[in-house]
Image 1 (cartoon, rainbow, N blue to C red):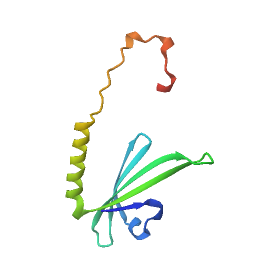
Image 2: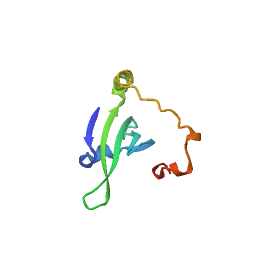
Image 3: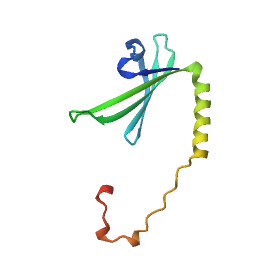
Image 4: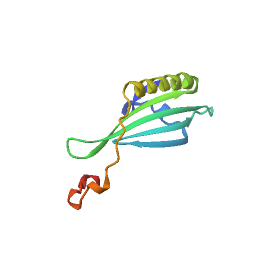
Length: 115
């Protein structure tokens, strides 16, 4: 497995042939799971986290961080990820939301942030 700052990445690694891509939008972040092929048609996975932020001059910029994951590491990576996700779910479960009672809201209770 190889971690890198996207802006300083080695162009040879970054230019693998694209085989398949799956973007996952999650709040302010987007994760890209990209299958790439080497010149020898050997596949590897890149996982990119992209987060949008506002620069000092008011423009939107994207911070990107990338992980290269090679086939020989898939099983260990997957096992470690499953283990840590189960740990987090057990120790800090996601609170369940109770649905709002529609009958208790009146037209004057409109929350414009939800629209």
